[in-house]
Length: 339
Image 1 (cartoon, rainbow, N blue to C red):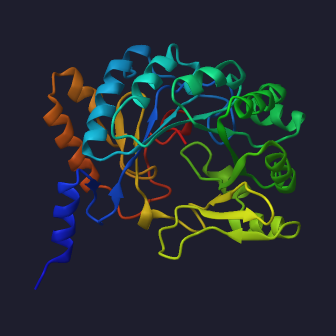
Image 2 (cartoon, rainbow, N blue to C red):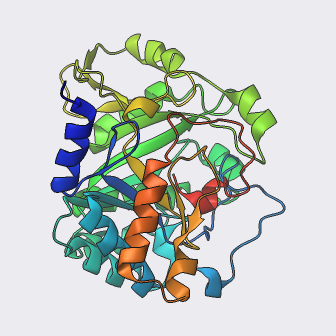
């Protein structure tokens, strides 16, 4: 009898593809380059007790690029630069230019809070970035100040407009929170239609410092979807093969896409294809998984590329079948882990 799983594993290895023990192909890496961010969004960075990493503990750009090359050699095809706020790290464009020049990558994208986007839009395009995600949870100035600690909503909107004028594709990320922005779904869709942006509604996820509040403010994607359907007919864009990481729709008569990320009500663990590299070099195979392994420590004690590849491949094989929401992981802080 043919062992089809063994045949598939051998085929993936021959093609230079990473796969875990559940036969998921891993081809997407999120690199958090800093834990610094000038905003203090309540679900991302607590208003008290924040401890930033010493600069010497962060991966330097040479280390990040070395690891990125190794990940690409193992089968990573998409890289997203995250933070903190990645545009706050000095000389970030130099790293981006090197990453976009890597053969084998199909895309390098970036997630930002939008505050510096007006200054960086043209340079991002010149550096090879074609798409950015902008985290924005309200379109009301007073509410934005309450949520983030800064009266900077006009700068974010200006950044979105500059990005679109520069030719960047823009996706808006809105984390839905009961009693905070649950009256703004239609406003966000109107804003997205006006500016030609895709939009993604994200369920609020608990972390080590917000578990009680996250539970109180949680809204399921189905509630948001039904609210939008009262004003627009939503056409499903999802495939029928079960490979759903987010539920995608298109408002009838428009070109933008609406996505729903539902880690609580509809987890996509069975098709998860991603890894996360944290700013101090910790590799996480699951947002709600174990604490990860330090690739920085391997590098700084003189580890070879082959050794690093072996550590990465071993970690991928240990990627859990599904997330363990509520796990006791001190690394699970979004301003450090990245979105």
